[in-house]
Amino acid sequence: MIYTVTFNPAIDYIVRLDKPLLPGMTNRSASEDCFFGGKGINVSRVLKNLGIESTALGFAAGFTGDAIIRSIVDEGVIADFIMLPEGMSRINVKIKSTQETEINAQGPRISTEALDKLLEKLDALRAGDTLVLAGSIPGSLPDNVYEIILDRLKDRGVMFVVDATKDLLLKVLKFHPFLIKPNNHELGEMFGVELKTDEEIEAYAGKLQQMGARNVLVSMAGDGAMLITEKGDRYRVGVPKGVVKNSVGAGDSMVAGFIAGYMETGDYRVALNMGTAAGSATAFSDDLATGELIRSIYETL
Image (cartoon, rainbow, N blue to C red; front, side):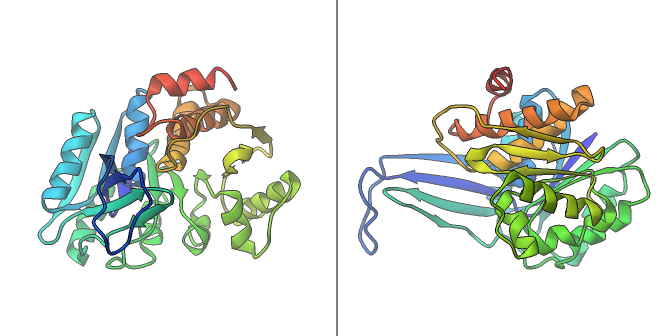
């Protein structure tokens, strides 16, 4: 079974204006949408769209938390969230006008007792399971919570997938994650350099492997992606043509597509292409990509 963890899920409230945003004035929208997610939830939703079951774990609170859980259950994702007694899950407001303005909420406080309940749920993981940890850590949790989780599970044969940035990622490499997914800019920031060529990206991805990562997937936006495998192979893929509508969830979709491709075939080239197809399909969609669109794009790579 695949398990995803979303510490701080959210409802993204998208407001579109057909005129420039006027601060301090009443602005009327042209259209609105609500999307329910968070990085781990996004991975679970895209996996489901590709026909692969997963269990979404995490924390939720209030009527917004109820709505988030209900929305993913309605899509067929298994949800096993811990409901917090106070506060409410986030509503992030994203105003799309001539420029895009975001207001991201803080989210509810997660107590030590609530974290212990999550750790108890994770104790059920066994050899052959996959755990996906993605995103930042809420301020109410210890900043080493990723390390706490992976240290607890390190000897159980669980495959770890970590999609995080800089120190958060570097500190978990000692647990030999199966997959990490920095983008090229994040990879450079980890080592204080600017990466301009494929050879430079490959070299610094190799440094992450020397520090413990098994497979390093580097996303490069419009330049495609590169995979350095634990076998020492380098695979490179470009991006398909399409109209970009949305950046939210594209990276999470790439992670889901990679996992799906690898689970179905055990082939790293297939995994890279499926991940690229999934990330691109979400970028070309208003919400997360459908399985049909992902597989259609995969056939073009």
